[in-house]
Amino acid sequence: MDHLEVLREKIAHLRTEIAAIQELNQEYRLREWVGTEAQVAHGDRQERLLAIQQELAKVADLGRRVLSVEKMKEQNRARLRLFKQEEAS
Image (cartoon, rainbow, N blue to C red; front, side, top):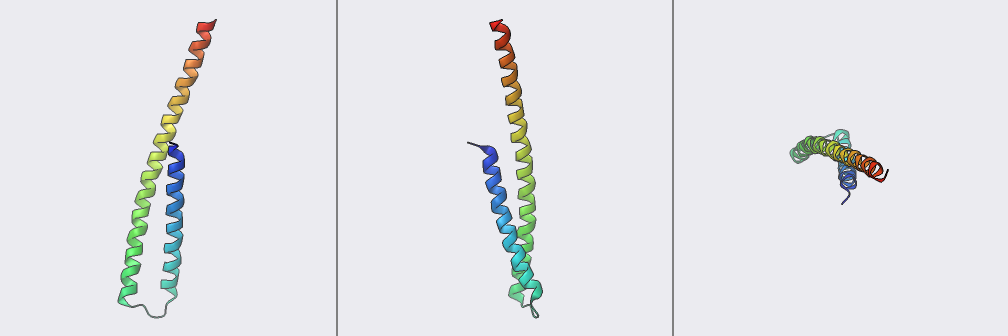
């Protein structure tokens, strides 16, 4: 399983959701009169944006971990190649 691809897909999904929220918020701001239901929906969208921020922070942390693990794997592969080359000599 490609962890980076999963993270990319998650980020793409969140970007789409953010764009939809931005569009709805723009419509909300352009209204002349805003009812209670619209205000509640706006508050819900604001809460969701905060939740998305937290999700992105977690995704960023996971991304750093995945890259770190991949870097360690590559370093180990390089050491193994050197060891095999020394054995062959």
